[in-house]
Image (cartoon, rainbow, N blue to C red):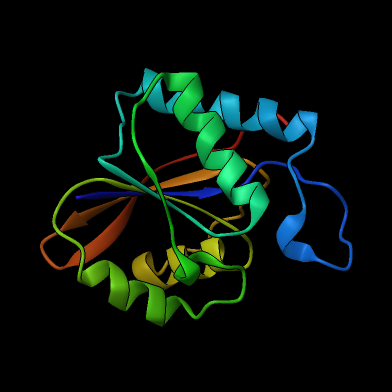
Length: 148
């Protein structure tokens, strides 16, 4: 079982409604670079979950389109920025064994990766951590940061 924990690409500046911030052109390019990296490594999710926030939804859609992957994006409220990593990890434990991609935000992506692997990772926009489950524990298998 693998988890692909993806931070959304660069988005519009902060405004009153954080949930409606969209990706900017540079953010789309970052996600396309990450998509190409995943494909070059032979990594592919079986299911995709994204935060309900616009930029995470756009990130997941861009990644799928770039790689011509016909997968449904499932909206998941446990992937919003300030969700508790322990709650997200408990939910992950209930998922059937397969590969999952989560399109989400800081601080959750960093806190969740740290919670699962006990390793701190710096997530720039469009970065992805690849975690693999070995027995009952998670380890950081790979990591990619697109050109900023």
